[in-house]
Image (cartoon, rainbow, N blue to C red; front, top):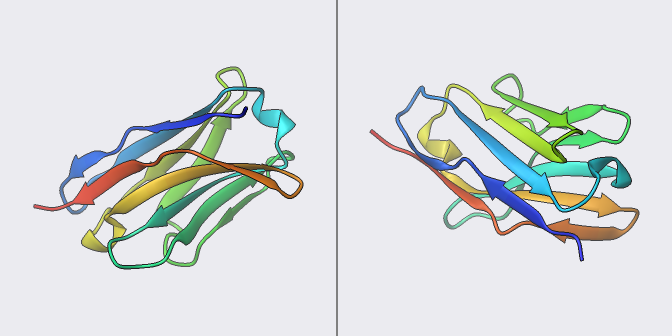
Length: 115
């Protein structure tokens, strides 16, 4: 069973930065795509960023230019660098991975932006 474990969330002041990690239980190059999503309080889940097996990245419109997704195959880990945080970025951030139509999800890590 594939496991994805997110970490790195926390409380940060507006304008601050965080780097989230998502460690997979197997080789990340086994997956077609790995991605980050988020769910803010009272809102639906939102796509944040993805990276496919070839290294192509994609970003949701609300985070483009502020968030950067990356990976380290030696650690079976993907990352999400989040800069210029604002209150609207407060959410639980989830990592996902897919092999064709089969999707796997992590438990999420909370990011709270507040002064």
